[in-house]
Image (cartoon, rainbow, N blue to C red):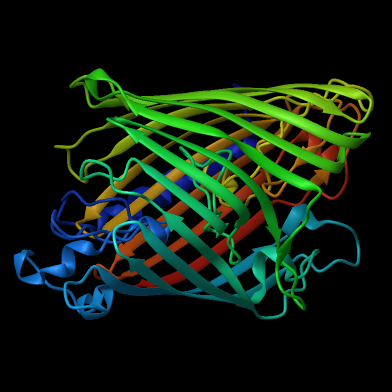
Length: 486
């Protein structure tokens, strides 16, 4: 794989800095992922990305639990004598300082591409259980940010003053002591698989949500979720609402297989009355069919994940044929100092072979872009081929340090470069495939089961395509975040 001198030099410097950072570390002990709260004892509930997936009914008899927590009194509030009607309260506060240098590679003359700004997000929810069958869940959100002078300003991903994030009625009739069928109607978040295609997008200050209905059916080790939803739009000066001309529906099924393997199968449909894909505009009907397999490879310490999807349908007068594929191989050396996990991955998402006419650009729908293709989010899962590798270490029990490197190319030279939101970063018909490379360093520290502190830095080394199509300064991004969950 060809690398420019700047990429090779940047990678060498990043590795050297990473080694120096760890040289002073001690206590090489195992720890869980730094992005999740510390795991309580096995019998206790855990905090989840989707807060309505938490089950605090075990606190009906707190004396049976091996440990207590400060917030136990508000996690189960009995509203009748036998506790069949009960209320659970929770929330989360997050503050994050972000800084940019040469946002979008310097952009156009006159634009301010260097900025530092501060984001805050508050979430609060109430979970009311009305017997074993009925449940009402409501969650409010406030996402604020100081003035942002970057192109696009504070935008709908950074600012949402006050909104209903989740608000639904759930019906789950008990059958033989279980609840195999769960029906939800109202506003609700979605999270499927590795979040490459469907995610609440927790990284963004204003999380994503939907209006509509969903149904979950569980049979043994398998679960299938069917849904018909409308994406909710953030409107700063009005109440957030969905548009009837954008519909999202489908089925996502997952099951555990022998030998600790797991398989996901899905069909995701989206209909938009107005869409534009690389010069083709009109009504869009796009169907996504995909599969994901993941799990450990025996007792080798290796783990493998593979996901692939194909899209068909129509946009305007053109047909849709697009696809994506990704594979990641990891090796976790559990007993080695600092418990390193080494990984290598390749990602591909198709681009359009030519502007206008039929559409070949893959649409990642509603992804968690920040998780897979670099900290700067300057590259999204459209018209891209990416090779990446890295190592995660646990120098202390509550600390995780991750160094990752990404190399990016355009899949088609006749299509644009898109960022994690789907916006066009550079539009071009022709030119080099080589976009550039990115080096990322992320540190996480879990102060206690409720408090997570993390920081990150990323540097993007521009490649030939960026230099051919406008200003091409290397970009830098850094952040410092603290999050408290209860």
